Image (tube, rainbow, N blue to C red):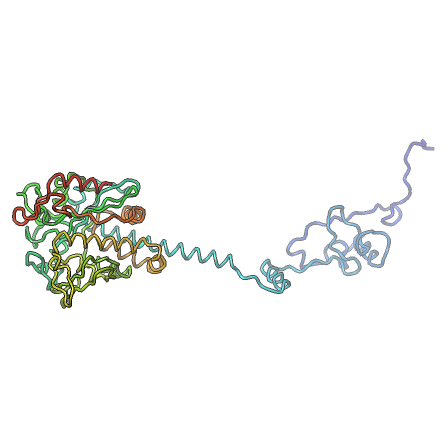
Length: 465
């Protein structure tokens, strides 16, 4: 007989027939295809062996298994998907995630608007439109930079990083008229003799056939100090008496007629004792298109002014009559260009004084040019103009650089726009703008304006800020 301490079996196991051990059914995780077949899992009607017998027994209400529905018990911790009986295990039908989401929304009784999705794609569209505008601006600026004469680029001293460090830009325009125009310059010259000659001065090249030396002079000379939080302007009267390297001293605008933009840079540097870092030669047709693309410019006219432009300005056909009231005026491209180039106004009809009454000289014209430049800047940087500028962004971006032929390409020209926005608006500043205070002689040699060194140094200090 065994010891009293020896444990004896208490009879046959309760889960099966006499002499057979109880079996446990382990259910694995169902795969995608296992949901499509139900008879090959233990406990189903189509199964075989002890599992099938136990399942049928459970379905008849037997006491062999405590599982739900009377089936065999699962391993602890696992979910019993079966319902027992003759049905076998029952799994929910497979549904894609998007169908489940729609059903949940339908059960909720309403479908939520896809606000986040709309906001996301709207943001993508806005960023894409801004990127397209910037790309158009950069590509157009680089195309214009390729046109500039190589000798002009060699005369400059700047670097591409204009925004963090202030640099000096020479803005100049010439008195050359496009081919086909009837307009004449101050010297009585009309249209350029050929398109090649017009393009030659447009690029700042030194005169060579088919152009002649002395044929075209600079019409506008303006210095802009931009970058480093500043944006200041200084206009140089075209009749200022200056020393031209390699030539006899005469009016500063003659430097262009002898050596193109490169000689003009050297002359201005010697005249004011400053270094010119960048240059922008105005293209008058592009200038008009830029102003039209931004919806015109607002200019404050000190006195009403009238004048007749023979042959028109820029477009050059049919003549053009300028008539501006005193105060704020919104000018389109053609009118703005005519106002900036007006030298000899006429008497305005009707009572009251006009610009001719008060006297209108080249100094007044320089102030008018600065007013137009300021108007362009304010149109591009004003917060109230953001919706308009955003909608027409690619058009403005493409036309803006075409107003100039400059060494500032796709990297530097956008920095100039940002510098203009950050630097604010400075008042108009013209060299010898107050002749009596600056002791300027307006009747110098050959009708030139003699500017003393003291006035030049004071003007440069204002420019540098």
